[in-house]
Amino acid sequence: NAGVTQTPKFQVLKTGQSMTLQCAQDMNHNSMYWYRQDPGMGLRLIYYSASEGTTDKGEVPNGYNVSRLNKREFSLRLESAAPSQTSVYFCASSEQGSDGYTFGSGTRLTVV
Amino acid sequence: QKEVEQNSGPLSVPEGAIASLNCTYSDRGSQSFFWYRQYSGKSPELIMSIYSNGDKEDGRFTAQLNKASQYVSLLIRDSQPSDSATYLCAVGASGGSYIPTFGRGTSLIVHP
Image 1 (cartoon, rainbow over the protein chains, first blue to last red):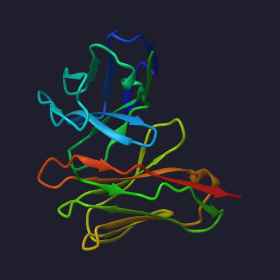
Image 2 (cartoon, rainbow over the protein chains, first blue to last red):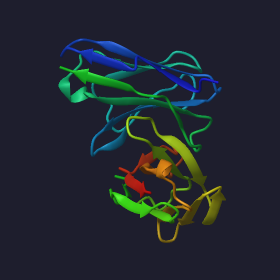
Image 3 (cartoon, each protein chain N blue to C red):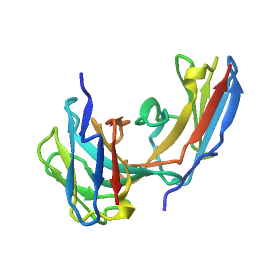
């Protein structure tokens, strides 16, 4: 019973490089989310997908794009990485928007 | 801007004591409230959800909600060193999106 799986767990990028963070859930949840967590800033929502086929911006969407590939998968893309995007990224899912979340184990991204 | 406030701590309690963690929020129409536990270097884990005024108990954990005072708390009875972690309060948005705002967390240390 994997829950929410994120890949990769660690990544170092050079400024200007691109990458995609992958997230998949096996709980048949409708809603999926991408957060970043920075020291002293707490969890901040980047993008979310309330249901398959929909995506919406969160609090800090600039510099990111997302794709809800199917009900299971929700990816986050950095087109041109910047040092300000150095952070820990968490994917999460919930059955409905009003439910609590199940989080993935996170991706620790460093942009140099 | 919806706000969720928590004392950053650290809150230090002896083993066996009751730990009391508090959270206030600004969105008067919020209907869903959550507590997450996050160990250092790990992802948040949902430990309690509460939707109605009053107390909700689950094992050693009790969540208390007072919507009139815009206050939610988490009590941990018989605290154990393994409870040492950061506890995040999350408050669901009103108006239909339910997207929660997370507090920055309270660090709890339970010493033997």
